[in-house]
Length: 400
Image (cartoon, rainbow, N blue to C red; front, side, top):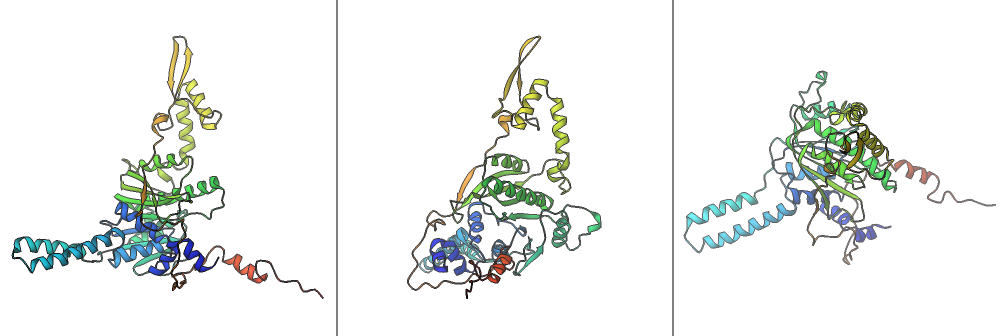
């Protein structure tokens, strides 16, 4: 597939090169911001799985340079137009009590102002080309040793000898656009992605301040509602969003968590993820022992998959007659209370490009090279081996 055919097939791939973005995923974050206003009152951000750096590039241009995109840019244009119209109006009338406040409000809206004390840290296993104002770390977010590195990047005075995994200067927003190399086996891909999201969440719990936000990529699968319920423990609002720049044929979506509210007494630590860690098996066993015998057997069959679906109420017979026993989950909640579905929201203007459609290119169109080619892609070694073998079909055989 040539460059021009890919430009036709994926309009956002073409627009990313034309507008100077490192990857088309920049539009996903911009469309999420249009819907949820993610960058409001935000000055400290952690970008996980950041390579090649398109989301960090958005953060740099919005928070550090003060640029505006999407709805903010449209409101900016409307404010400028209103300012021009009021300027014409003030030249034809004499009502300063009305004119000056209106002009001042329009000027404040249209003004671009970089925010002060902005701190942005980007982390990825792959190297990230430098970006203005961005601190980049090459580390594994699933490894406990990454926490001290991140805390040191956020606070230069951090003392690693304290062994504290709590940020003294917490952040307002944590982003994660990470995903595994998909295999095409949806169940396997969803499981690996859930583990990556689990690692990103545990890291976010160490650095987020109360009231903070968490945005991460997910693969929607059969049991994704369990993930929603887990996130609802820590955040007041949880939404599932699908930006228009995300292909409809893809199972990816983005979980947007607003207003971080950790449970009382909760203390984040990678040694005990989500406050449970390796004690989960013991907690399950202790909970099973507290259930009545019949309910315990039902719970065991339900957890092991012996029954396709466990009833919420079972009947047992004792000396007094028939007794109804409600099957509960491990947290003490009834089974029909833990299946919580997060609201689904489509982000982006409906008149914008469709990421699954092909568009006719203008006659004078010139295909551009990517702004930032991959520095160390996983397939780099495979390409080198293919070239050494003479291409996709190997070296030609010379017959005498």
